[in-house]
Amino acid sequence: MALHDVLVLNSNYEPLNVCHVRRAISLLMRGKADVIVEHSVSVRTVKGELSSPAVVRMRYQVKRPLPQLRLSRHAVLARDNFTCQYCGVRGKDMTIDHVIPRWAGGPHTWDNLVACCRKCNLKKADKTPQQANMKLARKPKRPSFIPYLSLPQYLRAQGREEWRDFLPFFPELSNYVDHVA
Image 1 (cartoon, helix red, strand yellow):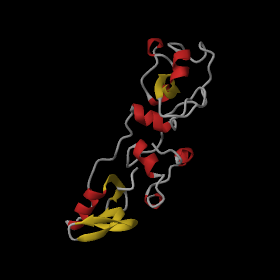
Image 2 (tube, one colour):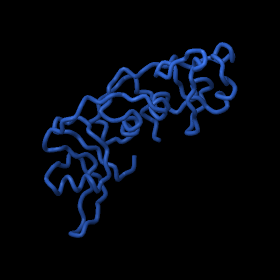
Image 3 (tube, one colour):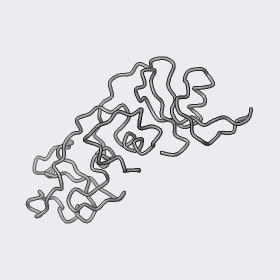
Image 4 (tube, one colour):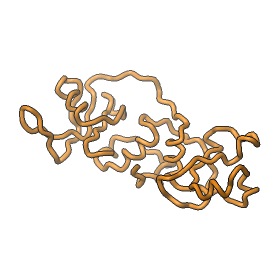
């Protein structure tokens, strides 16, 4: 998350979104939001300098459906902390592996997908971990929480000290707080 990103909270302090500082200032100028936390840096405007917001809260409740945790490549990589679940190598150049291959009836689900480095993916090929003589670091599972922000966005937001007080805490993700994409 860049310094110019701003955490937007609903009127009940529930995380809504992360937006650019320009959008946050627009919300402030139109009287739709209030600043909760400011950055130490300023933003230049036509009328002078303005303190840059880090966290803003909407003045009214924004109604939205309960968010769903979507299964996506990036969400699986974020869940596994961009770490190969076979050899433990960590990096951005990861692939997704079906633990039980699709040809063997392996579903495209949270419980069957893991982050995998290219080397291990080539070694495992189209086999089960047992056939390839490989062992998983941990059994994949669907995260049991419903985030207000997307999983990758939530994990990046945890890296921002000024935002942590406003984000819900999920113990199962405490190992991933250090991840910054």
